[in-house]
Image (tube, rainbow, N blue to C red; front, side):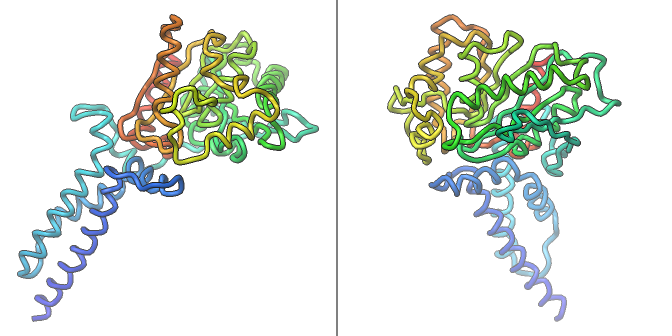
Length: 359
């Protein structure tokens, strides 16, 4: 009798858990409206590995008690949830892939130690250096990275690039994350000038002498992507090798009506950043012909903040100008900030391609 009561109670608990996982997994298919809700979709699509494993284990637990209807309903909901949580992996990798499921489930990334560099003393502008440990240090790295965080030009800080910076350092690639000045207190082109200031600091420091004379890559996320592209069109340092643009705003003037479709106020962000200059001055699309290094863009087709059309229009315009070394990676189902965490389906795709580009 007690065993039967326990079995019934367990089946109700299992049904409750199955229902919760199922309704959460629906976020993989349906985007909740609003910028704040975007984070829920992000978690479901990129960080669902632990829940995927839990659901899979739940499927394997045998039935207790005699309530077949409860058991069957629970199994159906759990199975659907597991399939939906796996869908982002399938969208990008298909059935046969090198996707690392253990990394996705554990959701742990390298965490490199950092040093802080003073870039501009009188404005207290700093940068983080992600230290390459001696055992993983290549004899002579082929390049180094400068990372530019996002935050709509008005927020964010250098530590937001910790996961990418640590990933690069763990692969023997030096990286620096610039804590650039924020708008509206500091406006364009100050953020661009601070990149040059950081380069001077790197090249004067003997600690970086084994790579400071090598080419460098600018990697910017969101607003940082726009700043990176602005730097590339304003007489950049000749050692600039390429720009990696992660979901950055490229059509700040909204030349194409489709590129203004956003759940955030992109116009307000751009106005805060540009200060008193023309919107054309900060528009990568308007200045596309002036960027003479390859631009590699990573964009999710479900981005709730920067419309996918911006990346497509920009890439097409550059292609017509015969910049054939550019590349556009469109990640199915990915939204803004898809690289958080880097262990997710989109994050793993990004990491693989960064290493391919460097090597």
